[in-house]
Image (cartoon, rainbow, N blue to C red; front, side, top):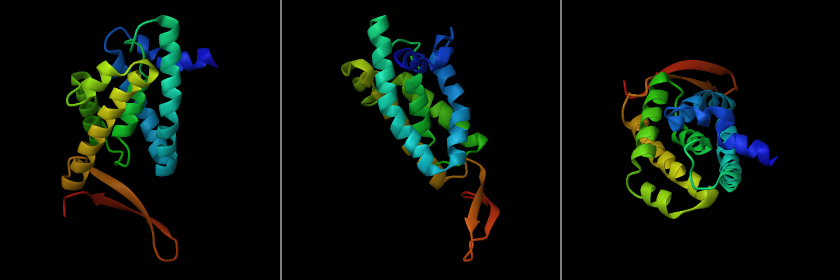
Length: 176
């Protein structure tokens, strides 16, 4: 189990990508975002909640066996941060692109209290917490973009009528 968790910490080798392993880890998360969004908000949120303690333990094991703090090859924190960024959003190419860029900028620049968390908290929690904070801030910005603009594109909504018949409709956010 320990070896599996250490592999999870580096997303089964993606964290060893020579240039921009955090970006590669975030990019590799896109299929997971789409899969979880397709399974529904309860499953999506359950996965996010479960991944936090699992990620903390995985990072802790990786650091114990390799020494140091927040190795660049650890990317499970980017996975969780990007999942948080994309929660409750339409799965359009625009949302994914904007969310990706926004999360990466916040994760790299570490503005506000994100940098403080990164510097002050050690261990597995310290590895994960700055990306969780970046994901929360990115998610709040994305939710504002989603509710106030049409930048995230159109989406297909599934809704049931009074007798439970499901129908599809194309919804243009902010266009009407």
